[in-house]
Every structure is written in C-alpha cells, then in structure tokens.
Length: 214
Picture 1 (tube, rainbow, N blue to C red):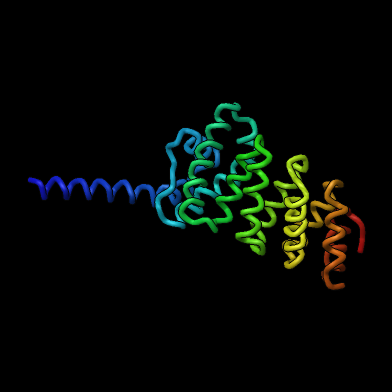
Picture 2: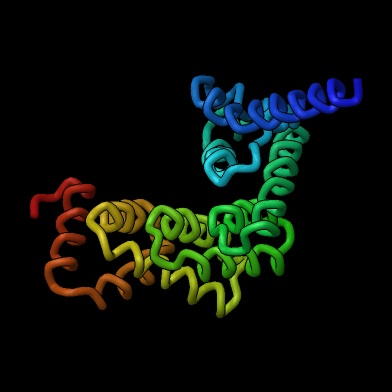
C-alpha cells in the first residue's frame, strides 16, 4: 500500500510538472487576450525548464504593448504585472544572468525608480550585445527618461550603439529617428561612430521612411 501511494504521488507530481512544461506551448495556440487573462489570473505559469520560462517571460514583455492589454482594467493590468514579476524574481534567483527576466523586472518597476534602474542595468550587463534585448531595453528607457540617471542613461546609449551592429537594428534606429524627435540626438551620436557604409545604410532607411528619394 505504501509503495502504491508513493507511486501515485510521483505520478501526480509528474503530471503537474508535465502540464507546467507544455502550458507555454499550448498557450501559443491561443490569442493574446486569453494569454493575458490567464497570466493575470495566475492560471498560466511556466514549468521549471529554461525553455518554458523564456516563453512565459516573452509573453510578459510582449503582451503589455498590445492594444488589448492597454484597455484592460487597471486591476487586471496590476495582476498581470504581479504574476510576471513573481516569475521573473524566481528566474533571476535561479539564474542571475537571465537578462530577459531582469527586463521583465524593469518593466514592472515603473513606480520605483531605484528598482527600475537596477533591473535595467542588470539586464544590460548580462546580455549587452543581444539585439532583441537591446531593442526592448532602449525602448523602455526612452519611454521613461525621468527614471534614468547618468549610469542608466549611458546604458541606454550603449544599447542604441549595439543596434547599429546589424541591418535590422538600423531599421529600428531609423524608425525611432523618424517618429521620435527626443531620441534623434542620441541616435545620431551612435550612428556617427559607425563605419561609413553603416552611416549610409542608416540614412537610406531614414529617407525611405520619410518618403524622400535617396
């Protein structure tokens, strides 16, 4: 009887762990609205694997930018942020170099300038040259300049510089230069430090976005 009960307990634990691992995969087939609601309700949590956690953290970064999320009641937005923050805190406690988790903590610390800057810098230190993270970090920093100090402002400029290292990154910079005048001075400074071919590529992209012939 004891062996049977132990076996049932292990089987139940295995099922629970398995559901945690496949939950992110299953969620990919649902719409953003359903995923947002599930995270806010605590009904969708990642398993223990890095893969499962990364999919969850990606939702934490992507979903708040959607129109659907922006029209949610404040209480539901707060519940979503709380769940994401809890998972991100557990992730960095396990793997302190998890830059995406640090970025989730940054995004959930808008009301706390010291925590915002600390998490932003931790994300930058752990993945300084990963372009998709540099893109998101720099966008978050540019959207909240009042939360930056000299150190985090320098990190923002380093992220902009990292984006000059690829043509997709230049696309991002050109779009920001065209649509956000507050970033133009910093973007010009980092582009001017690149080789001439990169500068020409950037100018071509700005001209195309502005509707002017090269």
